[in-house]
Image (cartoon, rainbow, N blue to C red):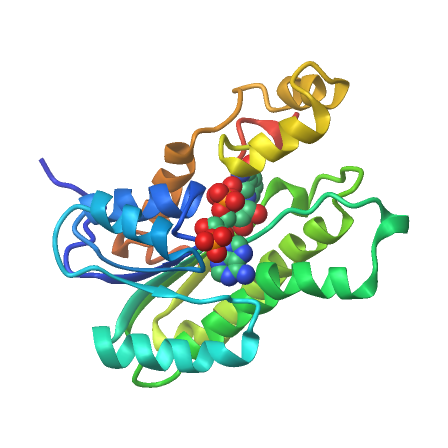
Length: 254
Ligand SMILES: NC(=O)c1ccc[n+]([C@@H]2O[C@H](COP(=O)([O-])OP(=O)(O)OC[C@H]3O[C@@H](n4cnc5c(N)ncnc54)[C@H](OP(=O)(O)O)[C@@H]3O)[C@@H](O)[C@H]2O)c1
């Protein structure tokens, strides 16, 4: 039987690999034959993920991706130690629910630093000559929040809409290099982020009930999201670029 998603020997960077969507995506991609390069801040968590990966030849790097000026050195080090790259899954991100009137400009920048500027700079650095193999695929993890409004999520929503907007243009700029770039936009997914949301809102709260009504297939598990990422990061997705794939249990259309 032919397997259309073949990641044998493809070297893929996954940021946000220490937990949630990034972690489970890394584990899935390793089962498909990819060599993983994990990035996040928490070393002990990254070591646990390394132990869960299938196959050999994986590596991890501890980095705070809000330090935008350090990303060039990070990418240079990764390429010199691991070789040219075949993919990036940018799953690092934070959601910090804050009402409009409580936002300070520095907090806005802080959220944008990790959710958008870190993504943009990783992409910029990885797309430089000598750092990638032909056919590289990039997948940023956006969110349904890019298109659905919610109280306290103004900056989170804006940072995800920025990712979706940027990939439409970047896709055209990198097409000559045979690079494809897209985002995956998950609905609510069972990770620490959802645990935080439940802590804030409560399981039987109006907000959570409305969420479950709207996202009528239920709360996603990380595998639901990882499966979509695995396809977009694979050579099989060579004709898909500059778009955002909703993986949202029907939420956006309901
Ligand atoms: N869960 C959902 O319902 C949901 C829905 C839609 C979209 N998303 C998006 O999916 C992505 C992953 O979220 P998740 O639910 O898997 O959340 P999570 O479990 O909290 O994971 C977030 C990841 O981002 C990393 N990270 C955070 N700040 C960082 C920094 N400054 N530098 C480097 N890494 C950093 C964390 O690693 P360290 O703390 O070790 O650095 C962690 O690995 C996010 O972009 C999120 O917006 C999630």
